[in-house]
Image (tube, rainbow, N blue to C red):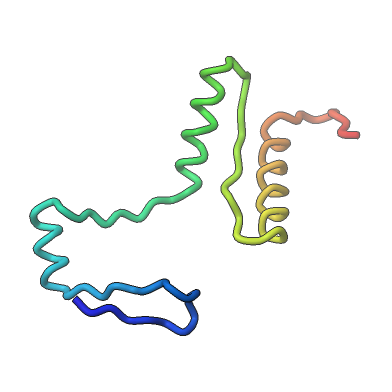
Amino acid sequence: MKICRSKKLPINWGLTIINRSILKRAREQSIVRIEIVNPQDQCEDLALEIQDRITLKSCTCNTKASNPEIAQRSLAGTIARYLENILVDGDLVV
């Protein structure tokens, strides 16, 4: 294995480069598993668990964002979807 240092990473951080054949062998032996996970799915599972544990009618959660602007947009979208689901014609949001 080779260790390579990147100038973009903080001091004392290193990246390990693994030979593809070693990685392939590790995957075949079930030592390594590569899985891409949608964080929104985990968030929905968490919301359902919270809803069940404390007996809520509904629960919505939002994934962690990388910066405040993205967090605001994500939260606004979550709120908009929630309101679309609960509001009916004639409701007034103040």
